[in-house]
Length: 322
Image (spheres, helix red, strand yellow):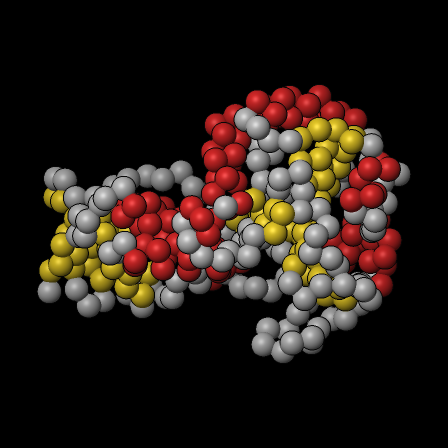
């Protein structure tokens, strides 16, 4: 069978679902979204979901400021609970980051974001576990926070459906073709024709676009994220930390269950095929991150890591050592 859509979106992550909602909100009709699995099953589900405005590129910063306003008031502006937690954001750096940091803060202040340089005493009052003897400049953004990526994506999907968007899950796209302005999308069960095809398929976007002769310059990389636990719960209200003093440019934030979630700000490991990605993290990475966290927060000298999915309170590889 051949179906038609005025707008056809491939990908049911945060981007795809929010685009579907925004199109419908602007009055678009006959909007269809196709997702090969369920909503929020790929990269979005693994996002650290930090909502911040500290970007050195002005265009990114302005976009982030407007996005923050939505996330801060999501239930009123869009509808739904996304678990947004405002924590603030501490940026720890060496002295040569002071001037670039001040330049970004100036841009943020012009956009109404409360950011400034603070001293170690104020930083420790905000986050009592921090060791800051090797930190030379500290920036503070009061409005940064984080949300639940699954709740945010499904909230957009629900509101899109409320506005008439058709969301189909379990639909595998097999081929794309174009004839003038009409694009054809063949799935495992039917064919769609549309004048407006939107690829919001993350790591699969470049391959899909190439079937239409469109080159999308995406570089795919794998970023490792782990969780650590100490004896006491890690409070959800403690600020998110970006540690520019480390080679890995680590960042960490509270996560549910009283643990801390740690990622890296490096370029990650290059990958060729997103279908082959796994959740495995090598022990060397865990040891290195554990050592960095021990330096930044000595209480993590005897930390535990690696939640076992589906087993509340269970942890594997229990000790992180130097």
